[in-house]
Length: 83
Image 1 (tube, rainbow, N blue to C red):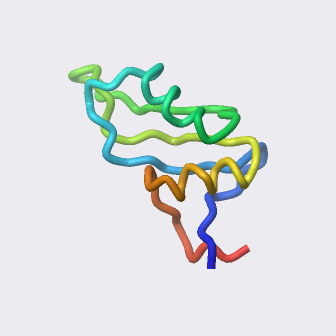
Image 2: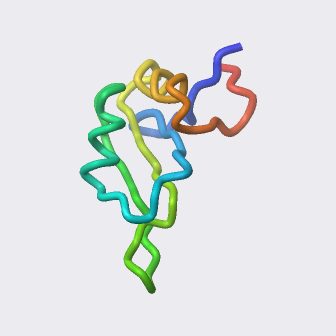
């Protein structure tokens, strides 16, 4: 059984955790673009500190790119991964 990200209307979304709070958006994007075309990426910031809350949501244009990022161990998959 191979795990894949969640399918959205536009692409495949993965949730990435354990991102250092002082990371910059460009740094995070550079890491994840190694696995494929990023359609969208969201980093939630703490309102009080302005730092990243420790997670990102990355949307890839196809299943293979999302799967490659998951295999690299950067994220986890919700559900059983069956498609």
